[in-house]
Amino acid sequence: MKHFIDKLWREHTLTAEEYRALLTCRDADTWAYLQHRAQKVTRSRFGNDVFIRGLIEISNRCRNNCYYCGIRSSNRSVARYALTLETILKCCREGYAAGFRTFVMQGGEDPAQTDEWVEATVASIRREFPDCAITLSLGEKSRETYERFFRAGANRYLLRHETHNETHYRRLHPAGMSSTHRLQCLQWLKEIGYQTGTGIMVGSPGQTVAHLVEDLQFIERFRPEMIGIGPFIPHRDTPFAGEAAGSADMTLRLISLFRLMHPDALIPSTTALATLVPDGRERGILAGANVVMPNLSPREQREKYALYDNKAAFGAEAAEGLKKLEERLRAIGYSISKERGDYKRSD
Image (cartoon, rainbow, N blue to C red; front, top):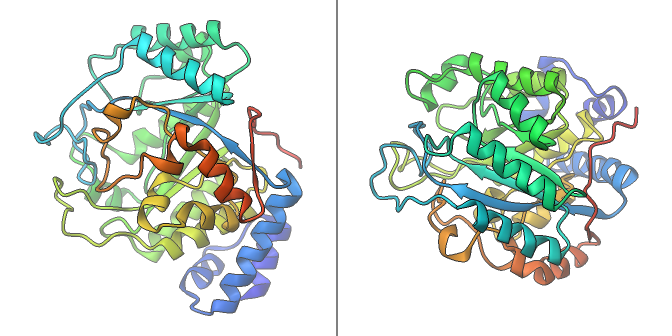
């Protein structure tokens, strides 16, 4: 199997059969070799730097009713909130003082937060912090809306496709949502000029190896600047409450595969991975990730943004825990970079 890993390292592509063979391989030496290769590539591109992004969860209200999500519209147990513009700017000011140069505005598809409001909020952040990158993760919009946000000053957009397989997508989402539209949104974002991020949820109900192969091939073709990948973790108030969580090991293997596939990509070691296993963040970095996203949201709101159960939002997962995060990264040979960390293709 190691020759498949070497091929991916050299050529950044594999056949569907080769991806399948790697995903189903159970040889520990093969996976250790994959991680070693991914680490070397990451070090060659980024040294020992890990970029930090300040995450601001602006609203847990959402029009959608995705079956896996704790803030789905039909969940009546959620205490809903939405941050004001001034609160968001306060979060940015605190983050800037701590050294953050990228702010990530993430939220549900909140009907009350109009396109005009988001546009004005982005413009306000851009005026006050002209040297910072602004990333949005606000779901599916029209092309015109994405263009407005881009003109207002947004640089990056995260929109995980979750699964490329249409049948599997329907297993995870209600009628009215479609993978076709999600993929169209991603194409618009790229065409407009955003640094565009997509990604998958590992181990979601009904997911098969064939689905993962489809995802690998899509991300290979799409060439996103950012790749977000995390394990599925159930939420108690969803139809998938009784399902098992995804595999941390498979998530780490996929991070390494994506690093060899796209050597310059910005790949976060996600909060979901840190929630699933205590050293998940560090293991993600060692597998080839190069981004972490400490939480800048107001402390009193963090527990309300519960996409899944027991979501990590304090300690080293929080902006105020930056010193602790630095210590933990230093222990594995890495350090925090306070640069913007823009995507730069080297080939």
